[in-house]
Image (cartoon, rainbow, N blue to C red; front, side):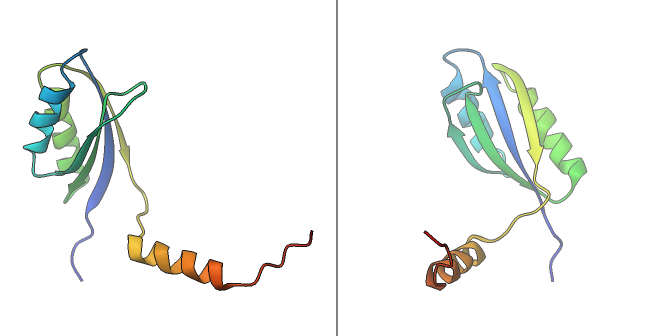
Length: 102
């Protein structure tokens, strides 16, 4: 079995109007698996995958150093479940008769 990867979500706050440029910079990083513009307190969110927490810290510092980045928030996952496992569990729940009393 292969080495378990470190996964994190990085929330990025940018200078107004620079979201597209920062998104372009993030998509050039091989550790960034997905990057999206979002609405709310943060402007962008990135899904990151690295081989170690040290590499995650280095990746976060590189993103923090991008032009037009004001701040970041890193949320490292502690448990991930593959999507196909989640789908199987949902199917099993749907197949089970309801025991709810109305």
